[in-house]
Image 1 (cartoon, helix red, strand yellow):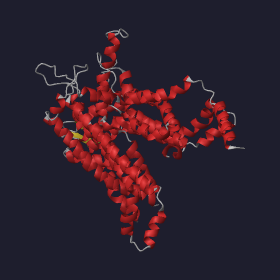
Image 2: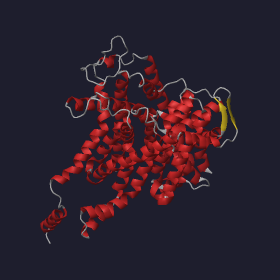
Image 3: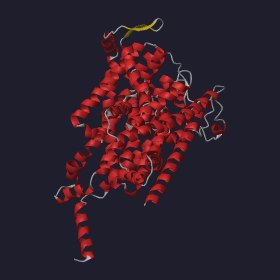
Image 4: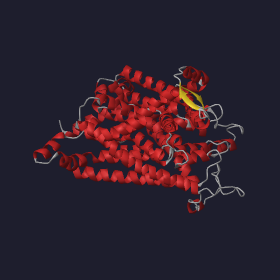
Length: 276
Length: 288
């Protein structure tokens, strides 16, 4: 009984502002009408097929960007997580703190800062153009490259932390044992360290891919006309077009894709591996 | 076998195990150093460009420029010049402070229940906490905004507050649960044996023991709230927050004042983290 007493205040808050809105969103996604006359629930499931066919490019683009970001972030993050966990020594916490520094500046402003850095005649491109390494008309802003690079940058701390936690937990004696049994460094890494770090890899993939697919700030600040993602469309349908059923439909589709993905992924690996 | 002989053997073994050429051992440390520089680079740019003498527009409002014009501290003197921006920052601080305190309290209780009790529905509590943490922000934002519109609730500071509390609760809950799960229950049993009632035991034993977890959860909630853009953008209505104001300004150009405020927020964050680290250090020393 005591447990329910502890749960009640926060639980009610979460039910009222998370569960109920999610259910309400599903009901809104089945409504028809227009912004002026209002919307009524007509159980119109065709909303889903229409929204999907209309926004198919954005759904595919978001999933593709998410996949690229996740792969790149894992490859970039693994070596440094490994280095801090195995060679960080007394300074482990200092290094981790440095990696978390970006969190102390709002992520919108970090993205704006990248816009400044990557601008056509800014710090990086301006310099490269001045010394003749790049043609004058070369630009990064507005491209998929800029969007993917921006999302990767913003999510890297989320990739590093779970990797670090799982690498740090590995019993060093196992590596020693591998070497005693005549493994060289590469083999010891491939056969002992890497398999033991897999739970961290899986957690990092979840923590990186979900926000990456749903992101729209990078596409807005660093991207151009051809880089809009599903998040941009949801925001636009809600705030600008006021087409509430379509916004709800798209949000539910995004949620469903990511949730089904995450649950299948967890089932495939066993929940233990994902949550611990 | 003498100690020196053992050391010598150990050294030989170590040499045999380090067949790497000299230069290769610098790859990983250099990579890590470059990586840390890369992660901090945008912040260095923000701090640097808050000193950029970019007031070169003729009669137009000052904007952040992409090139360097010279050093000035003028923006620091003029930082409160834009009333809307100042107000947005006040909103952000107000919501971050109030919502993180509320979320710390509510989330801590959930974390404690999850760590301490077996009850019917525990699996669903776990699932909801997982959902809350892993839902894409744009979905949370859209769901909340549609909900407020449907209910006919005017969006503003109140909806910002309730939404921020909601998305922070799961994060506090997992932080506190991690702390409470590692606690020795016999300490509480001892307090009870010595005649303390459940309430006294809670306030004198349990609470002080899980307090570091609550503190960490509160700081996390504060940081999440200050940083949040997506959900705020959906539920703010006519009120603006610091990140949403900046986002709105990107279309016309960002005034340098934003970078000054960002520098201050960065320093504020560093200070908070420093204080937290110090209290943890003192606590670990005291417990040894």
